Every structure is written in structure tokens, then in C-alpha cells.
Image (cartoon, rainbow, N blue to C red; front, side, top):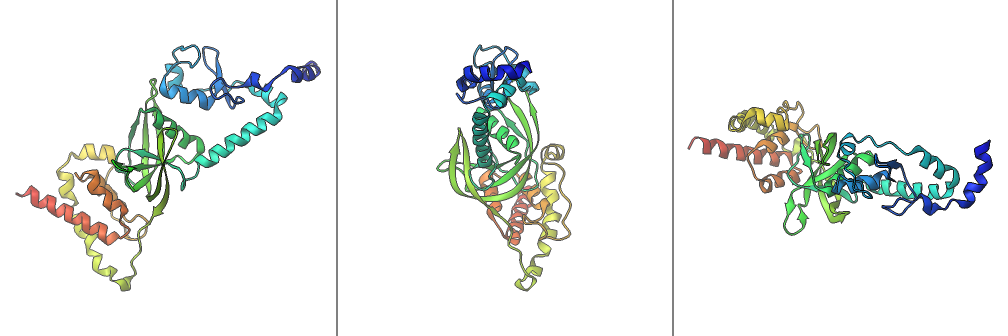
Length: 312
């Protein structure tokens, strides 16, 4: 009752600018207070900590706070905003929802990690240390998509025209802001437009799938190809350290009972491409192929060449 009687008085003296984040200059959204007593929007604080593990205002060390990631919302601040600034809060929530919806689109402005080759169904562990990629990974988690694209770098365009969508399975954070991200390949894509957002690359993309061959088109003639490739796969593995390969890429998948069951073709095909000692530029064309027989033929030629080189 006492609080209710004070409400009109508080409403008269409370200005929305009194509850603004000092980093984004907008009404607090998901306010959190640091151990040193300073309050910021959660996302604003995290972006600052991407660059420096210190409080943006007093520069107190926040390394342990950063590794624990136990951000506790400042309930009193949230209650004040909710009770005395309801219309301003609704507008702030609307802006936040629009931003999240835009970041959730996996066809337009898809975040692109420019680094290495990635393949469907194949694990791809990553070490994240650059501030722009820390932000990118966090956004993927916040939106709930848990996905981003992986492309090779390109001197002219910034990144290649073909890539693979990766799904985040787990993230381990460290006190200096670095993280190790466990991802796995999902879908192949072609880049329609190269873009950029907040320091990292993005792209408008379209997804690729294998074109299925009907039996009357001569598919039966290519059924012996996977058998030949599987027979030769031991050549590749024997030339490498098996434990290191399986530690990074996992064990080789079993042979598929139906070659054309998946839009990306057999999983063992991509695993083999990942472990073959080929440069990224040599692997990239395989990602773009939508013909399984062409992909199998290409892999077979590589393995035959490696077998011949081994016996010289």
C-alpha cells in the first residue's frame, strides 16, 4: 500500500533517461550489474567484454565473471522499468524482437565464419578468439538458430561462393574471452550476395542438394563406384595418423544402404574429403557438385593418384 501511494510521485520525477544504459544510450534491456556495481544491458556488456575483460566504466578486472557467464539480471531495475515506464519498455522490446528476427534468418544475412573447409555431417571444432566472431557465435546462440556458415577466404570477394552451414553443439568459454566451439556440418549452400555486419561477414545464400538420378538415366552404371572408393579409403587413412584424424573428425561413417537417401549424399563421402590431404581450393569444387556420381568419380581419382604416388 505504501509503494502504491508513492507511485504517482515516482512517475512524476522518473525520467526514462535515468534508466538508460551508458553504452547504447537506450532503455536498459535485460540489465545486469557487475561485481563492481555498474549496470548495463546484458548484450552491451558482453560486446565490451569481447574486446577487453574489464568493466567499461571503472576498468575493474572481470575475467572470472566472464568465464563463469553467470549474469544475474538486476531485478530492481527491471521492476522499476516495468512499473513506471511500460510504454517505453514495450517499444524497447519491439526493437529487440525485430533485431532478433533479422538475426534468425538463415537465408538472408547469414553470419559467415571465414576460415576453413567444412562438410555436411563432419565435426568441425573451432577456436574463437577474435571479438567479431565472439559476437557472431553469441548471436547464433541467442537467436536459437545455433547455426552459421563456414567459407574459405577469397582474395577478391572476401570469401568463397560455396560453403557449409555449421550447427553449434557445445561451447566452452575461457577467462580471457576465448572459446572452443564444437560444431558439425549440416547443409551446403551457394552464396548469392556477399555482405558484412558489425565487423563479421554475412551472406544471402541458397541451399544445395544432390540431384537424384532415376534408374533409367543410367544410375545402375555408377553403383560400383562407391564400392571402389570404399575399398581404396584405407590408403588415405594408412597415410595419416588414425587417432589424430578420428579425434578431430570422428570415426568414418558406415556405408549407406541407399546412396541417394540424403540430400547431401553419403556421409562417409564427406568424411573422406575432410581427411584427404588436399588443399581447401581442391576440396571446394566437391562442395559445389550436386551430382553424386561426379563427386564419387572425383574422390576415386584422388585416391588412385595417392595410391600410385605411394608405390613410386
